[in-house]
Length: 183
Image 1 (cartoon, one colour):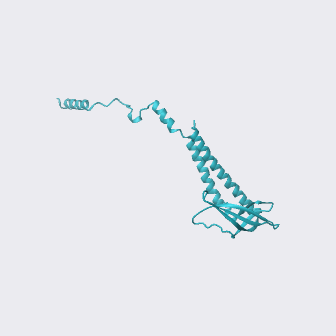
Image 2 (cartoon, one colour):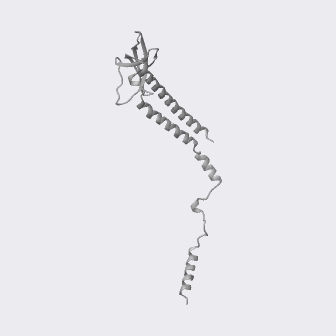
């Protein structure tokens, strides 16, 4: 039986991996749909917010719809040392669905197969390792069980007759040597 702590940790890890994998799959599906049916528009960055706790930059942008109205949305990016982030006033290329402009993506946030396949593979691997670790026997219970019923290691077991003490072996060798020498 699994301990409550192991079960809780396993559920959190599995839930996180599953949530991340589903989120990536949904973003990839949206990317494919936008590439097939979406319209292109140029957007402009209107605001940047930095989150030092989450180590992200939230980029707010506005783009013009086909009917001339303007639509505002945002996306967040992880801060990376070698990666430049947009500045206020920068132009972004946006793909959106004309029937639902809330479904849009900037070209920087698209999730292609080169992102999807490795990430989902890592998530599946982590889920398998988590399940494996959850199914392993609890070391504390195994140790407690073994202390109640001590077992003798195989190397300690005597399968043949017990070895003779060295004095007895020496005496037998001397007797065998006398018999060989005696006429």
